[in-house]
Image (cartoon, rainbow, N blue to C red; front, top):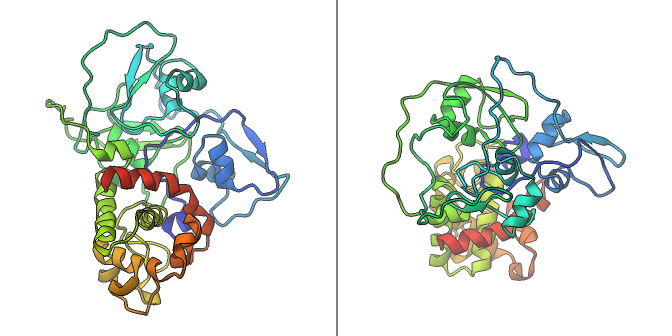
Length: 364
């Protein structure tokens, strides 16, 4: 089955480090994919597609030159961009932050920030983590305090306009923009005539609807496992359902990780009420192909049981789950997921193997 990401190119809101590209164009080589090129240059796949007028079904070929950076946007309003914040020694990661945005904010290079923190280009940062800012005056050491990532309305991030307009930068998602301005994702989508499948791109101006006065969090709350794993509250809750069903059925950890990675690829670990054709739910299961009624495939617990399959499969022998695949334990992560999902893009499951292990450790 094909995920909404496969058909619509909607961005994935996960707190994973992204880095700025080192080149503005790239000549396609044999074996390249847009996803691989984007990852190599620290960009989102949807941004590279948008910059080049491509969609998820487009084919690229050796020798083709792809644009990796948008031209400098012309602001709609006479609003000067905020000056970089002075370096302060350390910085506590906020929701939606990336290493590249942190480095830019403190006027230092990305490589220097990576080196100062012992990180690599593929490292993941998460809200509440303290990042050392190199080349800055030593900060006064205070007792370490970790807070849970914001869920309710919070004060806008420093430098962000309270309302009006916002110019998209590489790495932005609609959910991150909404959270930064203390409004809901749906409100931002409605204000711009967008849907959850719409693509945004660097340089695009997003209208920010007015919101109620932000509420500052007065009490410090201990950091949650969702912050450590990079999942938001909704994703963490769905991950726990998938893990819980797997534990109940006696599925090995690797099988549970495959289920988590599959759900992330298919629905971003969200119980979607839309998808490609009649696909719905965490695993984008299709009623028309025997996975259950619309209500059944939209039930996260039942959807997880159907994905695992085996003797407890609610679909019986109509569909084939992971436990029904002979020798699934010896298949690669992507091949095992593909054996159940039969996706048009089987190679995309592989990218979630390592993150899925992190989610299992944090929420299992």
